Amino acid sequence: MLFVVISFAVIVLIDFIPIIKARSRRTTVAFLIVFIPALTVSVLIALKVRVPSILLVLDKAFKSIGISYGSS
Image (cartoon, helix red, strand yellow):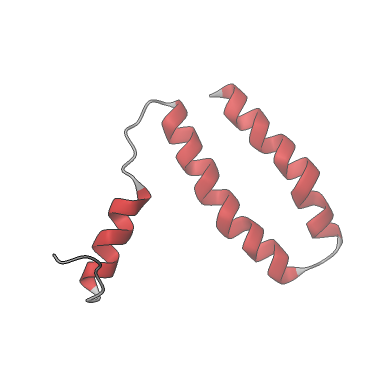
């Protein structure tokens, strides 16, 4: 797990610091929308927690609003 945290820290240093310095609010929000879930899932996987596939979650979400694919 330490490797995962260090890897994400390096990503923050390389990618996020310049975004903050550029004061780009939209880019900051977009980065965080992708970064935080990726960090969370990566840490959970590193801790050997079973994480369901995102496709299963999306399938349930789409079916709940009446969108589905296939003949089912």
